[in-house]
Image (tube, rainbow, N blue to C red; front, side):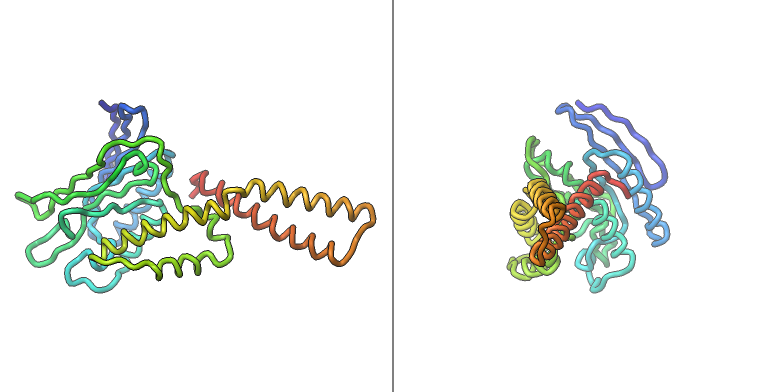
Length: 271
């Protein structure tokens, strides 16, 4: 069984749950407005609530906006509202889960759209073996019910998280662009996007181990070398080569410290 605390206001219902495995998480039930001005206020409200507790999150409901043009029949271009919804999901580091059993969740008989979805934080997704959304048959509504299938609980798996400190590495964006262009998958746009994101996640994990797994050792080594160079300067030993080397060490140390500062700032969840 789970302990549950609920709060409701406006278009948001918040539930705090404590499951039988003794881990706390929050669920937000959302009903999105259809006016862009009100949507922006909703994203700000959800971001504010999200920042209050450093726990796993799951958001679900009718967001009343699509994520990509392919999520609406006959819709061929992005809109400002779609871009703002994308920024909201990106800024909160939420995962848009794949939908099984259909491409759309709403229809009035003429237009088909994917308005309903579950969005989860990586720390929530890490508790389960496999997660997907399943579209169910509709009976008396213009919305298709969706089921969040978690496929069993799994403990101990570390979740993937984009590290902002990666952006401080020279050539990072170009490296990701080359990886993304090299991925070749077939299927619907949703399946292709999901497959590419999974492949990118694995490449980023491997690259992170190579570049950042020993960042504390790099910091210690650079500080020791800097201290040694400055000690030689105090003793009167100086040369053009030493000056150049000291400049290189200082530049490298600055990059390492910036990476660590960026990482800790992200972990603090400061907005």
